[in-house]
Image (cartoon, rainbow, N blue to C red; front, side, top):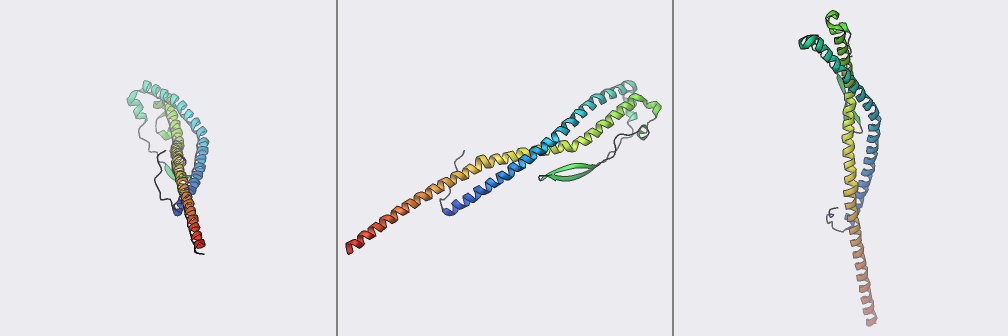
Length: 216
């Protein structure tokens, strides 16, 4: 630990350091409660997030082979023609706070999975292979949209947890020991001054008492 800065050993500085130490201890208690709440929230989100990631991984393993089958059957130009026109997907976002952390959530979005008629493709020219690939990629898009806010929230909570832990460490391991050292040094110095003053006063009283006896 680095040497504590020198502070004039006065009673006012001693009281000020004690008040500051009390504030630091209260801040540590608040930050520890915040850290516990963040950990609880992360554990609450961890299982659904892991399940969703597993489902996304499973869907990806099925969607891309389905796309390769379409490419093998129709070629690149034929597959591109099935995707015309590009689809515009708009979502509405809303903001909320968790322990003072700003996070975004998807409040409204259109359904991603469509029927064959809503895709605007002719059933005869499409074929079951293309329909299966389109279904799987729309399901994958649904999963990704559902997972995105949760993943962003987990990332923000993780950053907040790391920041809070650093703050607790700084207060507990650096600032609090520095203040305690300053308080100990000032109290020791003030006590030494008080003893010196007491001895000086006793010496003065003895001299005054001796002079009074000599006069009488």
